Amino acid sequence: MAGTGLRIALGVALVGGVIATGVILAPGKPTPPPTRAEPSGQETPELADEVAGTPELEVDTVPAREPFEQGRLLVGDPAPLIDAEHWYQGEPRSRLALGSVHVVDLWATWCGPCVRAMPHLSKLQNKYADQGLKVIAVSIDTGDSAHEQVQRFLERRSEDISFDVVLDAGGTKSAWLDTSGRDSIPSTYVVDRNGTVVWIGNPNTPEGEFGEPVIDRVLREIMSDTYDVAEAVDEARAEIMHAREAQKRTERVQELTEEMGSLWGGGDVEGALTIIDEIVSLEPENNSGLALRKAEVLLYERNKPEEASAFFVQMIDGPYFDDNETLLSFVNLFTGDVDPGDEGREAAVAAAELVVSRQPHPEHILVLARAQFAAGNQDEAVKNAIWARDFFDYGSGEYEFFDRYVRQFEQVD
Image 1: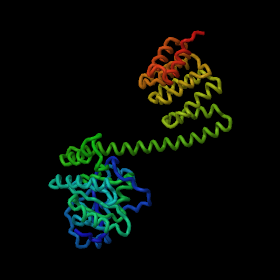
Image 2: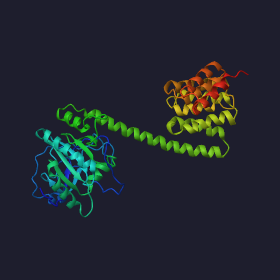
Image 3: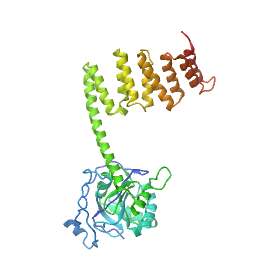
Image 4: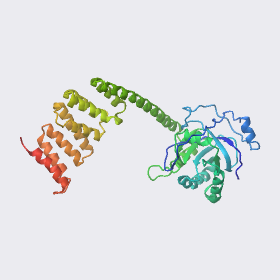
């Protein structure tokens, strides 16, 4: 069907998921989204005038529902409207009938991955047509020639497209793509028979590395009433709650970092070191450098080896247990020129052994040998230095480098 020139608001329910191969969109000023579909099914007077003559659909109504988070589109939310400027294929209508499953795909004529997905979307449309599937591809092409671009595209590739095609008037991208936090296309939304977005993702994304597209499994389970909507909703909302908590932690760390800087600049080193503990507990992955700095200050500048060693043990057993790089940095710090005492030396050996058990690289093994030598375990230090040395060919530069440590550890005072 040729473009109608109508500006049609269309209520749809879709499913959402994960970004896969697609085209990243340049940031821009979003178009204000249309409101969500009115649960009563009544159109505004303006919309009624626009769609005059359009066949009305006999539809059920959906109880009024609010999105989980205002301004966001998540799995489990009611589907937004589709703001259509032109309807190329399919019958124009003001809203989608409940009882059907819908796939809303946002694409553009210039998007290669979008075009590659179309034959598969057609196969899905044909496969599940008798079960009420309706695929709607919404072009987000913009500019004065957008209508002609989509029209020409359809004329060239009509054999690949057996679903409805719409040109966005601006509100669809804002209401679907932008509010769901996605910045690439194709972006596809599956809406179940109740008008709920149940999956958001890329139609090209496979299961695992080489499996079928994820959307195939989603639709198969929806059509057989085995898709676990509750689980999908819980996962999506858990991600949002996790993001909120992460944002709170980041803001708190920023506050603490400023406070720490003020204390340090004012000469209150002890107060600054105390704040480091809280910062590391909130965001250890981003603040290993601060943890190392605290240990260094305690050991090298404040002459508090017992306190430094206790802190080292706390870091090994806590936030940096799985962080090989940070553990090795601690080991090097505690096998330097300042004696950390028995507890510090033992902690250095334990941390190095932990790293080597996971990554027995020559460099890591040498760090362990150095820690063992510093702790007075000469025999183990020599054995491990030889182990590290023998990774390399005799006479090579690497062999000679490690052999110097073997000879150093073999010397008896």
